[in-house]
Length: 325
Ligand code: 2P0
Image (cartoon, rainbow, N blue to C red; front, side):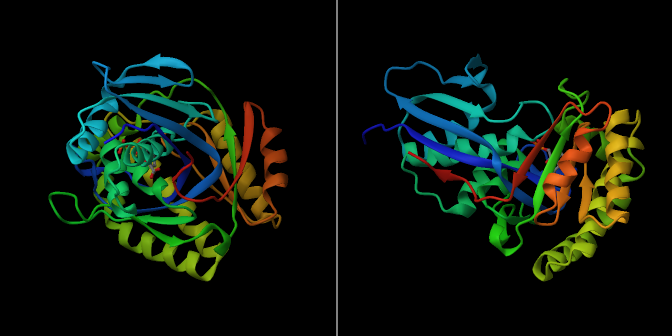
């Protein structure tokens, strides 16, 4: 087989019903399902170039040499599957700040497996790519698909049913997203560590899990019917419950800054005044505002005016991961 480099892109995704906790850490199997939207403008582009003469994988992240330890097991599976034992040069670029709470691991692993599948000619379907992406990072399984996406927790021990699938494409309901960046410092507690700690020490974790089926059902219905009121209810509730479970861990995990809370109040006050907008917050201090079509610009202007908001980024919903060359 001739070794051809391949480049793929994938969008970041934002969960409306959050993923928080694993049923198996080794295989990265989520304890419950989740539902997300994939963004168009915030993306990772990754090139995988298998080389016959390399002794180890090499990774360049946003132009800087980086440790390939986290991508090596992903590439190992493509090497095993293809029977081609070539180490790779991997170049990856995010068009948004890494470590700013914008889930670069999601778009990153989705782009990596899509590029690796093309470079090693392994011919995986979307389900297979989603499983490979999940093994890199749980949320990456969702970035294989565009628009509205559901991740299944699955029940099998081997994880073969723990993958994402498409609920609806972006044109079905072209919502807009505004990300308010309140700090560029790396977050205090990484997501993996935060969810494991919450799961093992928070008395609220069982309550978090017990509400998941109802939240997933409500989000699915809201998306199918384009019912924004229902989507607002479940999105804000899921984010607040996730943070409540983390706050109640021992010791508690507090991801929010003053500007985070100020954004949440501003979003609720805009909604009371008639703007179609709701919030969600991931494992960090940034706020993501989910807006009805056409409302993103107004929300971005208001959030940019809040003390402590360093930058706002606007995005639309976009397609799933794809090979670009
Ligand atoms: C989510 N987060 O659903 C949730 C909400 C953060 C808060 O998925 O351990 O980096 O690699 O599977 O994918 C971030 O978790 O964690 C995440 P691992 P990941 O978007």
